[in-house]
Image (cartoon, rainbow, N blue to C red; front, top):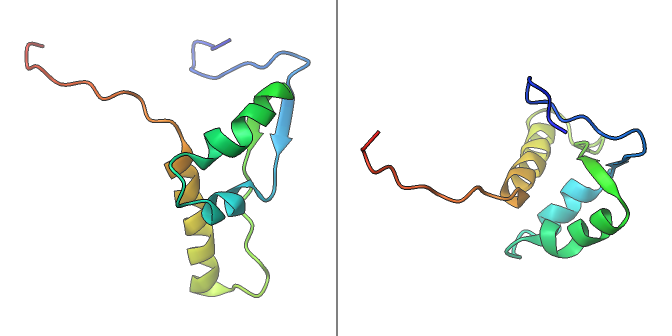
Length: 94
């Protein structure tokens, strides 16, 4: 259920998954059209997962700018995996 502030309230029995390696797996599968929907979404849905957290992991040996690049690649993979709303054409009659 969505609140007036646009926040989503979860049921008391909702399952939350904080899958540490999901973002890194999205990077590995980046050549696939929609790896999250194809590989993980059906399993998460079947398991009752209502909220998916994706922590960013940067290995300790990746420091400074190299570590930032690792993090940004994971963030980019996440954004590419999200469903896109259908495009609407502005007809200018508004």
